[in-house]
Each structure stands twice: as C-alpha cells, then as structure tokens.
Image (cartoon, rainbow, N blue to C red; front, side):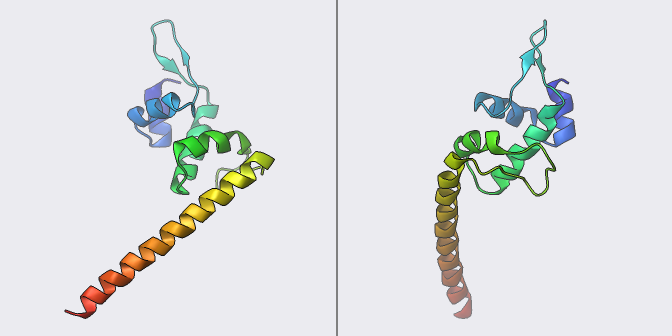
Length: 117
C-alpha cells in the first residue's frame, strides 16, 4: 500500500509516517517510480507506535521497545518483557512518576491562586 492509504487506515499524517521511517520505527520499500510501499503489517506497526507514544515514550525508547511488542491484539498493547526492556520500562515509569509529581505541584499552585480570587 502507498503512504496515502496507510495514512487513511491509521489516521496518521503522511508527514508523521515519513518521520517514523526516518526514526527507524517503520519500514517501507520503494516502487520503481520511487513511491514508498508498505506491507499490510505496517498498519499494526503504526498503531503500536501510536500506543507507545500515548504512554509517554519517546521515539528513541520506542525503537528499543517495538521489537518486544507481540503481534496480537492492539488494545491493550501486549509487550513481551525482553530482559533489556525491563530496565527501560522502569526508567520510563520513574520519569512518568516524576512528571506526575511536578504536574500535581503546578496544579496545587494554580488552585491556590484561584482560591485567592
């Protein structure tokens, strides 16, 4: 399938699909006229990438996590916990916890400002 069809089937813009390819997250072949050609599996791969991005992972982390995603159902995302992946997920969880703490502090400060009105 061409990039336009992949974009339609996944709801992801062509520009983002090209970016995923640049980041090594998505593979394509080239047709004789130079168009990107994707396999049917690319739809699932893009959905996995989107799910991992929604979890707060960066494309750099996703590159290491993506090989451990099982090709089963997309929801919930099914990860095979490769030994190398455990440390990565633990670091990402710690970063998310830190970000949540920071957001809660900001929320508290904004609430205090509103209480003074």
